[in-house]
Amino acid sequence: MELLNQLISDFASLVWGLPLLILLIGGGLYLLILSRFLPFRYLGHAFQVLRGKYDNPDDAGEISHFQALTTALSSTIGMGNIAGVAVAISIGGPGAVFWMWVSAVIGMSTKFFTSTLAIMYRGKDSHGHIQGGPMYFIMEGLGKKWKPMAVFFSLCGLVGALPVFNVNQLTQAVNDILLEPNGFEVGFYSNLVIGIVLVSITSIVILGGLNRISKVASKMVPSMVLLYFVLVLFILIVNFDVVPKYFLMIFTDAFAANNFKGDSFLGGLVGGLILLGVRRGAFSNEAGIGTAPMAHGAAKTNEPVREGLVAMLGPAIDTLVVCTLTALAILVTGVWQTTDANGVSLTASAFATAMPGIGKYLLLICIAVFSISSLFSFSYYGSKCMSFLFGEDRKHYYNYIYIASIIMGATTSLAMMINLIDGFFALMAIPTMTATLIMAPRVVKEFKAYKKRTFK
Image (cartoon, helix red, strand yellow):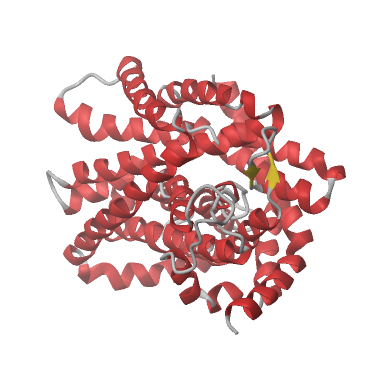
């Protein structure tokens, strides 16, 4: 197991090197400049689209703009926001948060382009149903000769969409917050029981297909974000005297790297800190990875730009709001300096410190809902990759692999799970970003035409 752990860790470090950083951040900056900061100029219009002002039930697609965003958010607002931020701070200190923000701002532009393309170049599955996502916009937008890249994305998606990190951290949360303090023996068998319970809940929803997934997500996600917001607001009020100090530290530490404990990158600790923040940011908001365009590609609309504008709200809600809340809770309570806990246990320590007795249980409710909602949407992404590779008739087989991997995630180590998913996320980003950068001028042209049609 130690050898396997090391191999997976080396693989993740290799693919998350300088070339990928240039592709994600450099590519995202190029898209931001090419569009003349378009995503930020049309935020108001994006919210109008999200509220349903332009909905047309006769448009092609399966789900509404709101359901598409909440389905995409249910996969991104999960353990990346609660455990991923804690991992970033425990290794990188407050400065890691700044680089997560940078990745989110750039990610908004990337999400706009990838999700606009997901509607512009929708394809058809083996049953003739309309589908969207990177594998389809690569094939439809760039032509059949690019099929190997679409196949590569789908193969990586089969592993990248597995829920092992989410399940691993939810299991750790149940053990640390609920079972151990109440005298239960924690080990392989308790983890197995948690895995079986998660399998039961997940099966009921995912076997009902995208419509059931999107309906459940659109109800669960907004209420949980609100509850989480209220809880962290309480922690910040209790510790209001140190909030300015730590908020400032996010900026100063980003360039000093005084609290960075990881490996240096490009010859310096700041380079290592930037890589850590961007990697955790990408894991949190998935911009450029290619998962969200699969959900947005199913939206009921004939206007690609509208879905792109809705999609770009994802990184803002996910990283700029939810990740920042988690980061501030960990920083102002001081637990990042006083405990060796990592991942979800560190966030739980922050809540327990600020709200003794009840805090960690309230966090557990948020964690459970965030994690379980992520399980639903990731199964959809994986089965969509399966359908592209092996035909619509065989996509249901993925659900069985997916359900088995829940048991694996519940019973294996955090390091192995986080490196495995990180590595395959990185590989998914290569075809997604390459195709997006090639077709970016077409998106800008489409936006100009949309502006003439909409704002006459």
